[in-house]
Image 1: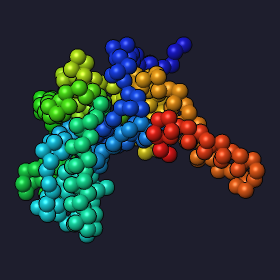
Image 2: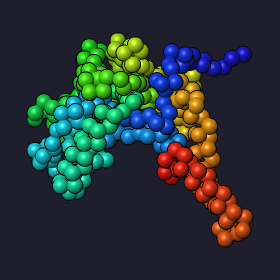
Image 3: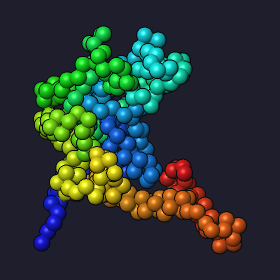
Image 4: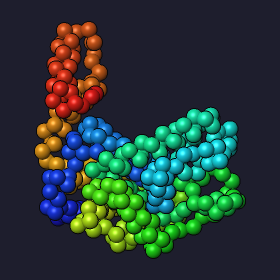
Length: 318
């Protein structure tokens, strides 16, 4: 008896030139699940940049970040505000917020420059959408990427329609392709459940995102969909694959979804190098019983030889 519903994923439509290898340059935008995939890419020493403006949950926030980066927007004091003794920007996640206005502006403009450079040279852009729910700052009718705990009476919550999401995604694709026509764009929907919006509201939100994405993806135009949401809900489909909050995928689930992503999007020619890097990473995290033992010193010498070989052959740093 089969107690699983395995999601069929095939990479037969992708050539090796379309897949990711250690020469690829990857830019990731989106929800906290983007960070999960990005950290796996980091672990295996792929060339990637993760969320220069911090975690972005909805398509309008991602569109705005890409637009500002391509147009080389310069953030000024008019773009930031002081709240709870910290300076914030509505275009960025609170992880960029700072007690210094000057530091925040410096970080925002550095993010613009970094994103601009990476869009030009990226081979792959991965966009993970988390929610269709958005928040609008009533004072200026601006859609914000993050509310930064502004009083609720100053914020209007609404859900993007399917057509509005389609328009936003088409804008993202058009903007990126205008300066980098050969880049591959991979869309996915975060399996993280946004239950603060409500159970029904979360389902409605994910449905809007999924419907919109499938209206814009076209492999012949190098735009693709990866089913991380479906893998979590229809393949794993069990609370043992969630963290204790019953909202976020746990390490087992993340590892499983990563394996499916690897099987689909990572060039098989990179597997041997990934295995070598994995061995080195595990060696670097090893904690010996006796650091001064002869055995451990020999282990460190062998590990350093492996690192030197990888660095010389592939210009990868640890």
